[in-house]
Image (cartoon, rainbow, N blue to C red):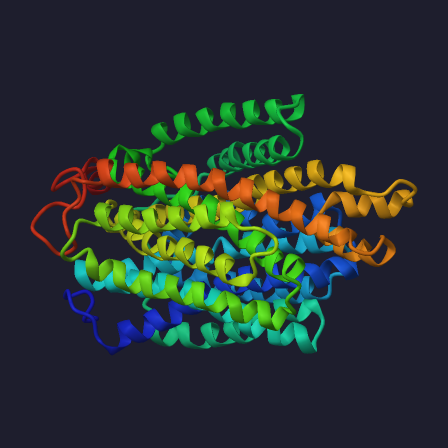
Amino acid sequence: MSTATAGGAGAREWGGLAVLSLPTMLLGLDVTVLYLALPSLAEDLHPSGTEELWIMDAYGFLIAGFLITMGTLGDRIGRRRLLMIGTAAFGAVSVLAAWSTSAEMLIVARAALGIAGATLMPSTLALITNMFADERRRSVAIGLWATSFALGMALGPVVGGAMLNHFWWGSAFLLAIPVAAVLLVAAPLLIPEYRAPYSGRLDLPSVGLSLVAILPVIYAVKRFAEDGPDAAAIAAALVGAVFAVMFVRRQGKLASPLLDMRLFTDRTFSAALSVLLVGLVGVGGSMLLITQQLQLVEELPPVEAGLWMGPPALLMFLAAIGAPLAARRVPPGIVVAVTLALSVVGYVLLARVDASDGVTPIVTGFALIYLGLGAIAALGTDLVVSAAPPEKAGSASAMSETVQELGLALGVAVLGSLATAVYRGRIDGEIPAGTPSEVARSAGDSLAGAASSAPRMPDGWFDAAREAATAGLNTAMSVAAGCTVVLCLLSAVVLRHVGVIGGDEPRGDSEASPAQQAGSRA
C-alpha cells in the first residue's frame, strides 16, 4: 500500500506528481508559444482576422467540450490509462499542426489537439487526489501542479522565442514530443492506476447531449462578439440551452450519470467554479492582447517579447505556491479576494496605457493580473476537488478544467473580438483614399494585417494602427476590470464560510456536504 493511502506521501507520490505536472506544463507552454508564433504564422498562412481567432481558441473550445466526457471516461477505464492514451495522441497531432500548410488545416489540427488535451488535465488532477489523501499535502500538491502550468507559461516565451528566432513557427508545436515521450515512459513506474468502483457504463447519449449543449453556446458567443446579436447567434444560443436542459434532466435519471448534478448543490463547489470561469476570461483575453501589443505595437522581436513575458509568469508561479500556504492561516475566500483586487489594479493600468508609454507599464499590469491567476488556479481548483468525494474526483476535476479552458477560450473570443471591433472602428477613417482594396481590407481587419500591409502604406501610417490597437486593448481591459471587481466580492462573501486548509472548520457547506453525500450513495 502506498504511503499516500495511509495519509502520508512518500518519494513515489512526489515523483508521480512531477510526472503528472509534465502535461500541465506542456499545456501552459503551448499557450504562450502560440501567442508568440501568431505574427510569423500569419505571414506564412495569411489567415483572416476570424481565422486567427479560430486558430487561437479552437483548441480551448474543443477541450472544454470534451473535458466532462473524458473526466468520467477516466473514472471508468482507468485514469492513468486515459492519460497515456491522450498523451500519445497529443504528441502525434502536434506533428500534424507543426507542418500545417493552410489556416484551415491548422484550425483542424488545433481542434484535434483540444480533444486529445481533454484527456490530460482531469486525469492528472484526479490522480493527484488519489495519491495525496491528507488535506494539507493534497493542497500543496495541487498548488505545485498549478504552478507547473505557470512554469510552462514562463518557459514558453523564452524557449519559444528562441526557437522562433532560429526555426519556423511550426517548431513551437514540436515541443510536445519530448514531454510526451518522458510521460509515457515514467507514468507506469510512478503513478498508480485508479478506476472508480461501481462507475457503470459510459452513457453515449449523454456524451452527445453535452457536446450539442456546449458547442452551440460557444459558437453563439463568438458570433455575438464578432457580429452582434444576429439571428444565427440567437438561434445557436437557444439550441445550446435546449440541449443543456435535456442533458441535465437525463443526468438526474441515470444511476451512473456522465456528470453528477448533485455536485452543484455544494455552495463552495459552485462559487469556486464561477471564480475560475470569469477569472480566466480576463486572463485569456489579456494574454492574447498583451503578446500582440509587445510584438506589433512595441515592435519587439519574439525572443525579447518572450523575456518580457517571463516576470509576470514568475509572479503567477509564486502566487500559486504561496496562496495554499497563506490559506492555512487566512480563509481561502479572503486570499482569493485580495489577490484578485491586485489583478484589478493590473487591468486598470492596462486600461490607461498609451501606445507611446513603452513596455514597463504593460508588463507591470500584466504581472498583477497573473498574480491573481496563480491564486485562483491553485485555491479555486483545490476548493472544487475538496468539495467532491474521492470517487467523483474525475467529474469534479473535469468541471474545474472545463470552466478554466472555456474561460480562456471565451476571453480570446470576447475580449479579442471586442478589441478588434474597436480597432476596426478607429482605423476605418485612417486608411488613405486610393489604397488597393486587398491592402485596405488586410490593414483594416486586424493589427497583424496592418503590420504586413505597412510597407505598402504611406510613411507614418502604422502609428495610427498602433494607436487604434492600443485603444482596443484599453477597452477590453476596462471590461475585464469590472468583471474582476465582481469576483472579488463573490470570493469575499460567498466563500467566507470556508475554513482554513487543514483546520477544524469544514471546507464545504457542512461536514458532509450534499455533494459528498451524493458520492457516498453512488
